[in-house]
Length: 555
Image: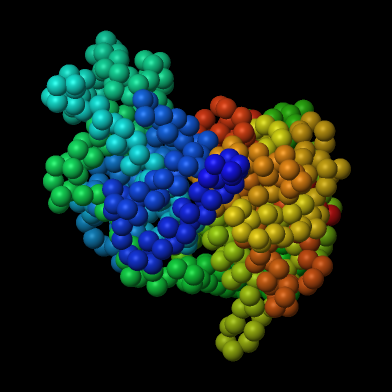
């Protein structure tokens, strides 16, 4: 690979990881310590994703990466040597512990002390995500296990101390500082770095028991690797069940999800109304339309963004009010993990809107109906939109809905700007494939005010947020591609929209809107996803996009 650029090497690594993961899912199993696992590991090392920082440095443990992964995998994953990925199983009535990670909508079951079972409902994107995280943990576990023995072949003093701290209950004061100092030696990190990682994971641990503590995580990772070499029965294995392999490529969950939504539209009598689909979070549309009256705002001089920031944690109260004014909340029961809201905007004529929200609501039959769906995950976006846009059959009659627009408001990594900026897509470019889609975006820079930086250009749809490196992204940004951002769903949404137009499920002049707020910048140190959530600075871009989309739809 001497004659290849770093960007080309990165693209080959991504393609190799994807091809290997696809093959292993069809094969049905692999051992992370075996040849197949080594292929995944080599690809990840070659790619060296920004989110995993110092993964390739053998001297130090990548703490930010561990923090990131541990909030997206089930608690206790570091203790398990047998991991199974399966389709939906009837496990609700069993005694296994059900675990949902803090920052990923996926269900896992702790089958035993050594075994974890992932329920896969969102297709290959979810499998890539899990395998990437597991491969990273395997790399770090081997680095940690190298600290178990000292130069004399005996268990090191630091490891013996770590074992005591891993078993202890919530050390504090000087005892905690001594334990963190000892751990920092094992990790090759400074005391402050180790303490910061410990405090961050403690915050998550206390939040619905989100993770184990840092001592336990590090000890379990290193100990699992040592046991694997000492006892063949403890070998780390990943399995894919036949039911999962049969499900790949089918739309089982998306079809059930979409039918539930369409059934509700029919039930509410909105078949002949103009329907606008919005992919968004579950709070911004509701808060923008209903919060001002629901919370009976007395501070008239607050901007809409300051008002939302002040009342951002009162979403439940706003939802209850909205349900009495034309909003219907549909909790997902399909396993897709995509909740939905159906909003009849004719009711907005009778409530007070924030003074900065200028909406001319039509009469009832002309007022649009909003179908607001929560975020999809990767290629799941194609599945759910493809199914939602299909006509609905009821009692032998086919109903074709009047879909008038699709608006996608998402978060993405930005390349030319910084966290909190806004990106408007002019095209979606699939990473690693020749599939590219031009976007006739109904959103323009002139629709937004100048208090937030707005960028327009192609957006790269990537395989996974954890499979990105600086060189590949820099190539997309600095060459004639002139890409401005990267995300996981946009290209899949547009692929489904184009398919629906070809199949005459949508008119060819359907309005499409793509706007993203920047959650991270993978090209800037300290601004990757591993550096933490966007926080309050994300309120303004999120609600500015929301306000523009609603104005476009209703006016």
